[in-house]
Image 1 (tube, rainbow, N blue to C red):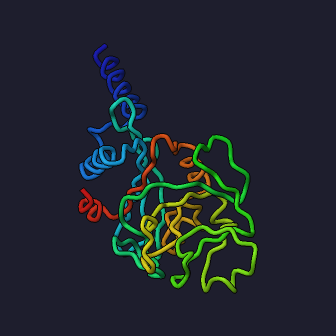
Image 2: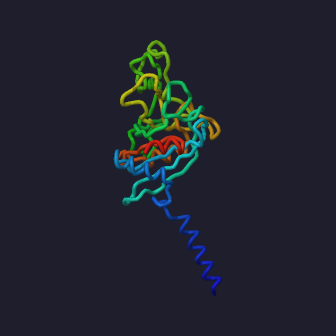
Length: 237
């Protein structure tokens, strides 16, 4: 009889651990401090951590939290890749690094029509959509719709109708208010090439995961990305 009771207890503990959401008590202390800081300052109720393994490496993970009934609940966890040269709070144009910091999420976009379930503002891109990374241009770090010859207007730009990377994506609002020329441009959350392929400075994961997070992110909950190594995040308190 005692063995049966113990078996039920063990089974109950296992089921509880599998199906119980991760509330604040189980969140790493540095993340908990940032969750509360960003909620207080921005009223953000959806926060995505992009935690780089090391400052000079391109691998990391994404952990997404939502503020539910006055508690932070972990919603998603998934692998991620970042810039080929790692991540830095002092990013510069062309350095191959992702920016470390706290950033709002802007509009979403994709090369296909808006998928069901996305509530972020969404733009289906075409051949006239460009993101300008020409540091000499007044259009630097802006999304521009232009029907002329882009090579005559800018020295450097990205086409937003880019497959497979921009099949789905969202703007990480880095260096946008104000825009500082040379501090980096065109920072997105988008589809990765592969789990072992870095980006030029963006944050990426699988197509399925990107779509899942885009559907989860709710503009009324002011989604925010917090990016960096654990050490860099501890300097953001």
